[in-house]
Image (cartoon, rainbow over all chains, first blue to last red; front, top):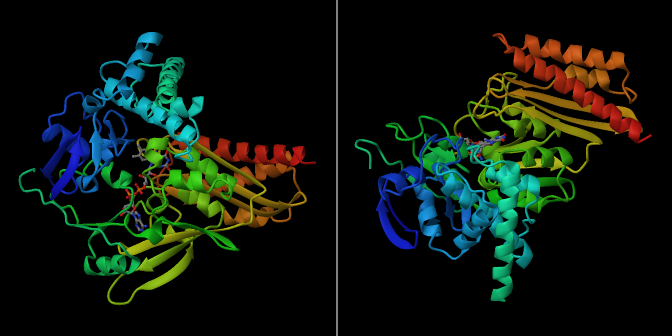
Length: 170
Length: 296
Ligand SMILES: Cc1cc2nc3c(=O)[nH]c(=O)nc-3n(C[C@H](O)[C@H](O)[C@H](O)COP(=O)(O)OP(=O)(O)OC[C@H]3O[C@@H](n4cnc5c(N)ncnc54)[C@H](O)[C@@H]3O)c2cc1C
């Protein structure tokens, strides 16, 4: 199957099996580093990417759903300005995910930050994430390197930077 | 591409009639909703015998949530998250609780109501909850030139062991719930049905009562790979019973349901599932009592 999509800002025409999972496409065709393929069944949570700006487990996305889609892996995300909010939050709090889950947890944090932006702008009916939601969503990645307090501290710090960014923009 | 691995054809019908005709023309194709169950099977990819795919995601009727005078109708490809955000005001509390406790937001955006009902090998939390709420499902049978559409009570989709009774070409299109609200409900679950089905127990319970007199008592106990039990006798036994229940009544209900649990399996049920079931039933009944006392 031929699929046109955009991965990390590059427009690509891929020839892949229609049911091939996105994590394998990224690993085989694009040799994306940092994306660990552990479980293949959504249970480790270590293959998160942003698909059309929403966090997804790439092992649960088949190639045929990528037609016309925008995929952002952690490498691509690091080139965006949004990354700096989390980078600074990690620095400020002195807590950060371990190297094994750094990419996935960071992208889950980003999806939670997007919820603030969307709920404040009225673009989504999603509410701002509460503490339970934050801990549960980050827990999609099963690596135990961050405890609940660290997750909440990181999120709070990153949210402050993200809000300032919005205030400055408008 | 992997050598010798076929790339399945993907059909993406845009209307219900195209969907029906695709299912008739490709009887061996797999219906694809959120894909979370299909893709989480260990033998999913690469495999030599992958069926063609019929994606359900482009059919607008399947994505709708409708409110009529009497029913809430939910399209089969409505996602858990969509149902939670759109229907919060009209959702029964038990359903909301079940959806919120399933997976995480990120995964709930992908899990569809139809997909969670139609998993072939495993029973998840949603069927038990919808059974306790006496939901009905619309099923279209797409074999041959004639398409038959019928509404079934959801518990008729499974046998006591949780086996899925629909045929491969039967398509679930809508789920229908009445507006009558349960007076008490609870959903208790332990374990992960996907990764640890042998230890998981899920209990959904809805009780309708009228001035402290039990009218309907609907409980469903689910073991993901071996049980989907609705103790109908207890429903009859409890009809007309005054709340709060006495200690003896609670013991009698627990004993009766546990006897059914233990007798409905051919093989020995793991002790952890037996113990969890007993405790969940007790705890549900005590919660019912607590609520009825607080309403006095
Ligand atoms: C990471 C993860 C966490 C999870 N956590 C939970 C949890 O906490 N609680 C829980 O209950 N479940 C959980 N699940 C399981 C999830 O609910 C199932 O995977 C469910 O089947 C998902 O629906 P889907 O739309 O993705 O189904 P799909 O994978 O698309 O389909 C499932 C099956 O149903 C068939 N099918 C789909 N739609 C229809 C239809 N309309 N008519 C007829 N057949 C149809 C398909 O052919 C397939 O056989 C989890 C899954 C994952 C991957």
